[in-house]
Length: 124
Image 1 (tube, one colour):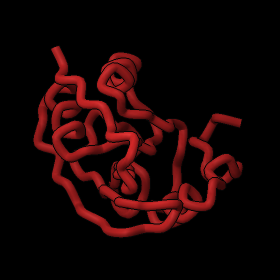
Image 2 (tube, one colour; image 1 turned 135 degrees about the horizontal axis):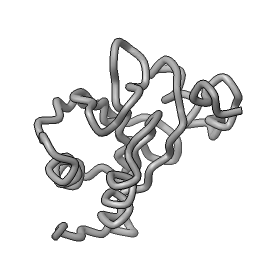
Image 3 (tube, helix red, strand yellow; image 1 turned 45 degrees about the horizontal axis):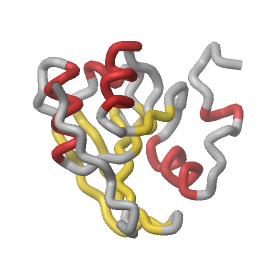
Image 4 (cartoon, helix red, strand yellow; image 1 turned 90 degrees about the horizontal axis):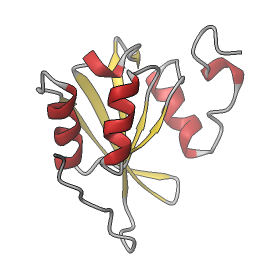
């Protein structure tokens, strides 16, 4: 069973995780081993941390995201089981996003991830 840790509604900082592979959003979250954690406040970046994901199972990975205070994950694809596990852990997942990590982060901060060039190939 997961430890349900709710976000503090008064917290000013949001931590968003971006799975990275060769400078782009990793194709599959379930097996990605590097995450870029971006802290932001009111759509302005406040800091970054690179996290090497050590968990072998999706449950271990989910717990690791919780431990690091991740509130949102922006990713390309993930299994239904992992999606529901993250959802149960109160981590919001935005999926079917592809592209250069820096461009995706900037688009996320300005609310522009709905642009067609950020859609996963085949998701028109």
